[in-house]
Amino acid sequence: MSRVFAIANQKGGVGKTTTAVNLAASLAVAEQSVLLIDLDPQANASTGLGVRVADGGTYRVLTGESALADEIRDSSMPGLQVVPATPDLAATERELLDVEAPMSRLRDSLKAVRERFDYVIIDCPPSLGVLTLNALTAADRVLVPLQCEYYALEGLSQLVGTIERVRASLNPDLSVHGVVLTMFDARNNLAAEVAAEVREHFRVFEAVIPRNVRLAEAPSHGKPVLLYDAASRGAYGYLKLARELLDDFPDAA
Ligand code: ATP
Ligand code: MG
Image 1 (cartoon, protein in one colour):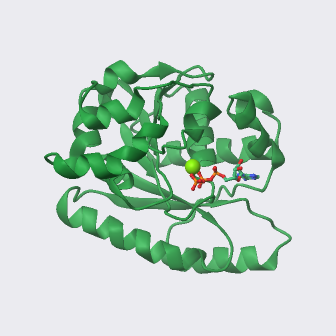
Image 2 (cartoon, protein in one colour; image 1 turned 180 degrees about the vertical axis):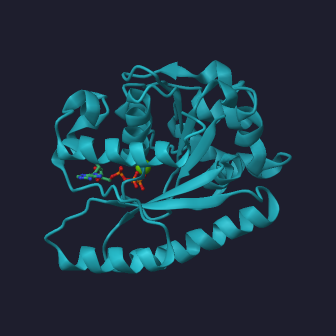
C-alpha cells in the first residue's frame, strides 16, 4: 500500500524542498522504500540528493516521451530513489496546454510503479500551475510546509481553494494531511502566535522543524541532513516528522 504525498505551498522559500528531501530520507532510514519525484524546474531536490541529469527526468515523463520507471535514479541515500527534474520542465507550463488530460499526466504514469514504493513524495514548485496541479492530481495527501510569519495564512487560502478545485474534478480523495511548521524560532513570539492560529484551521504536526544551518548546508554536499549531520536538530526534526507520518499509517509499515 503506497502513499503519495505532494509537498505544496505556492509561496517561495518556505521549506518545501528541504521537507521533501529530508522527510523522504527519514522515511528511507525507517526502512521504507521511497521515491521522490522532483516537479520543480529548479531541480533543488534532485541536486540536494546528489542526482544531476542534463535531460530526461520528470520533463520526459510529463510529455509522454519516457515511462516513469525508466527515469528513476538512485540517490545518495540508500532506500531513496529519485525521478529528477531538469530546467526544461518549465516549458511544460505551455507545452502541456495542447495535450489531452494535461493534469493527469503524472498520475497516469505513476500507476505502473506506485506499488513498488511504500511512500512517494512529490516536490512542487512555488506556483499553482500545471506542475503543481499534476502533483495534486497524482497525490493521496498534501503536506504543507509553512514558515511562521505574517501573511503565512493568506497564501494558504489560495492553496486550499486550488485543492478544493482538484477534489471537485480530477482527484476526489485528495486531502490536506497536515501543516509542517518550518524554520521555527521558539524565541520569536510571532512564530508562536502564527502557529496557534494555523492550529485553529489545520492539523499541525507536533514535529516542528527548527531553523538549523545544517539543513541549509547539506544540499551543497548532495546529501540529506541525515548523511551530513545526523546529530543536528534539523535531522532530529525530520526524523520526528517521519515517525508521526508512519504512526498515521500503521498498515503501510
Ligand atoms: P522554492 O519555493 O524556491 O522551491 P522551498 O519552499 O522549496 O523554495 P527550500 O528550498 O526548502 O524552500 O528552503 C529555502 C531556503 O531556506 C533554502 O536555502 C534552504 O536551505 C533554507 N532552509 C529551509 N529550511 C530550513 C531550516 N529549517 N533551517 C534553516 N534553513 C532552512
Ligand atoms: Mg523548492
